[in-house]
Length: 580
Image (tube, rainbow, N blue to C red; front, side, top):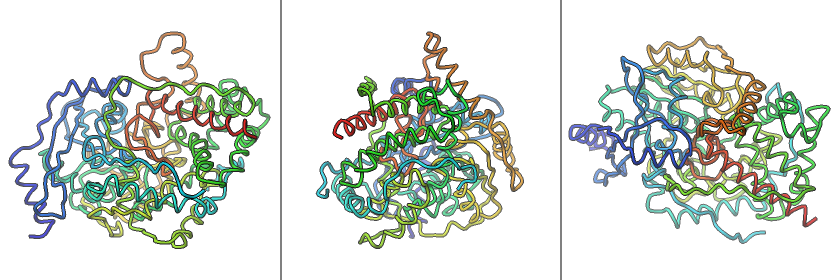
């Protein structure tokens, strides 16, 4: 019996024995709410056994943890399975944090279901600590100039390639038992097992965000006949993800950063960075940042530690670009960063919590995407053309955006099943792609590249900033999404939606809410951000994919973690200046 036939037969046996049985899980609800420090939607829990290894007919079983937030209106139309990206985001943390906002996009008549994918949460969590010690020393709206940068090729040749190999070796030693079992092809098969167990028909209804769009492409390519409804929001180019190179991923980050600087200038005294610099033009804000960063850039390529300092400082500006509601806080932290050149460094915020962290994974984002990567290189010269191409993508951020991706080319634990196809299929129902025109980490070109391979699919563009509809709400886009989930109606090709609020309106609303909160009328949630995501959306990030803990997250926990990151960056700047 072939592997595929065995898996199908095994799935039928498992479903016949026990379909999903969602039940209350109050203790976990309480723990997640405490960890995230926000109000969350109440969710139910269930478990499902799937093959640990789909390539082994005698495989042991793996228990998946699933979570459901019930529909709020009748008649209930069914279930929508949601992946929150990363890779590495858990369903346990993300679903209850985002459910209310997702309901505004998907519609109130659907049960929202998610799960902890392989390598995350408590589902064979990928755990790898980077090596401690090191043996070696386009968008038309963009017209503001760029941040000071370092030479990407020099970094790669001096420290990057060797460090990538040491990182890969360290992970092989620490995670070799399960590191080849967490790839996206296996996750796609898990999704089909979940669909069967939901007892909701044979077709999948799916909403994928960020890496969840790459997973959606894997699912659609491997199981095109089982696509019922599929909305992919904030799209990775599946070919870039498959290879592990992510070359196009930084294509719009400069435009996103320019949007931040422009909005700060327009907000004037409501932007602390504006208040500090008192600029005559937006370019004056950029000049102030470059003055602060120049000494770090000068020494960044002198050794690994110097580069990692540069990476930490500059990456701290990427994360809040995901969510325009975090931009006023980004301005506050940049003000601290610029002031660090002349003032006493502030104390790094204390964001420790008594809450136990749910996600047991560490660096799952690297473990998952590296195990999927099909491009492998033995010598630096084999990978160098990709580095040289990546260096041209973003004037401001290429020098830090791609660093953590280089380990993928030297990975020692390829997934036991990798998808080698071309992502060209005719799905049972055409796919709806949704993408912002100024997304910092999943540029709209990724949506068009993905759509070109799936017959009948449509790209719905919106002119919002940030990463996906959850970052830049649009009633126009939500109405198209809800109609699609109901009857598979797609918008016309070339449709472009507008966000519900302009960047300046969003900024001013955040400042006003923050002022109200500081006067003691807070409802207990962060007013400067939305509820959490996975902590790994940017290829430049190296943290594991836990929910509102870091990148792309919006909850109060995310804000605190971001403050700690930027606080550490400020300390690093101060130390560098003190040594000059």
